[in-house]
Image 1 (cartoon, rainbow, N blue to C red):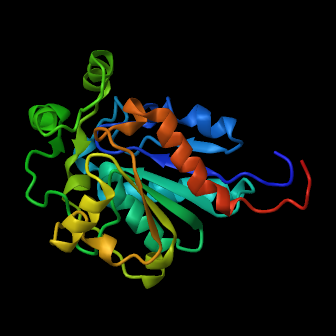
Image 2 (cartoon, rainbow, N blue to C red):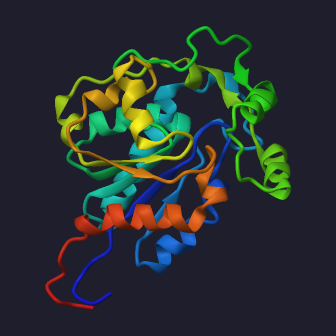
Length: 251
């Protein structure tokens, strides 16, 4: 790239997923000149021996380590992309390191408020995909996915550590509220996202608190990294572009 330096992008998948979930998106980001780190969070490795012991703080620590590694590698502030349930640890990282995050991209999700947990009463130690499969199908979450994508999802999904579902999110630094963010609205429109937040939907309530959010409509199901990967990559690149530092005209 001439005259610009790239921005490091960290991709964090939602429940049941590993770094592989971004395989159709990451190449386009790299083609745009951006270094990319796609994460598999602790407990989401296929052979993890003790998922029930993995908590939300473990996921926060893993994302923080990725931020630190990017900065140590010469990156400026990073773009943090969180899909679905990954918004909980991503929000906590934003709270702990607001000066290191140039932009947050919330993929069919939203930042969380202090005390939020997706399912505080979850029993059994883990949340397997199978427990949610039928409801996800019925509610339209899987819209636009091919039979092959559905089969791959079901085959590669890993049980989500239960403590990462229960929460709670803990945040306290108001500076996080001013970090620029892009909310990618897939399952619902941007208008619906804002309306549901105003109506008190807990998983969207923090949208009312953050002061520098843009909304992008990308109508599809809840898994746009598979159903509309090229368009999602374009949104992420656009979010990263304003934060690329000037390199003084060097190539």
